Length: 205
Image (cartoon, rainbow, N blue to C red; front, side):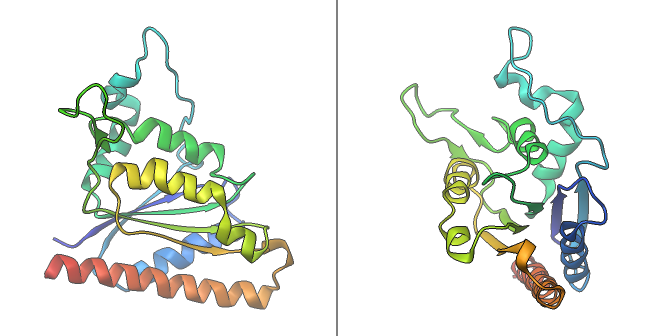
């Protein structure tokens, strides 16, 4: 079977530059043997609101019917690719809600058998890669040092066992010329093709 890549796309405007990034990612992956599934959170009307109370417990999130399809996609894929804009130093609320509601205990991590004092769980996403393609308006140095990125890397993706975890970003988007944007999209397509080829080689090997 070919490797499966789950592409999670988050932007409300189908004419945005972020959508062009999505198109470049899928075009690159299309040159590889990978099986690609795209989740367009806005187009699908994904509900990002995590409700927790006496009737809705966090430990039962792996049983919520409304997110069953999304959890199944995560379980089946070999890699997840996130495509989004960086807003206020982090994921858009829609994408953060997706992570809140689908990266649940029993699927992406587990404390089973770890004892009551355990700090780190078993990362159940071991063997799966995570890639990020995003844009932001911050200068390149600020983008590279971004504490929001490193916080998400450690507290979500490393925590859940993803490896490798790689990011590709275009800083200073508002000040970037159309020519520079076009060049970056070519690079995005190449990066996506390369990651798909790596997954295929790993599956074949």
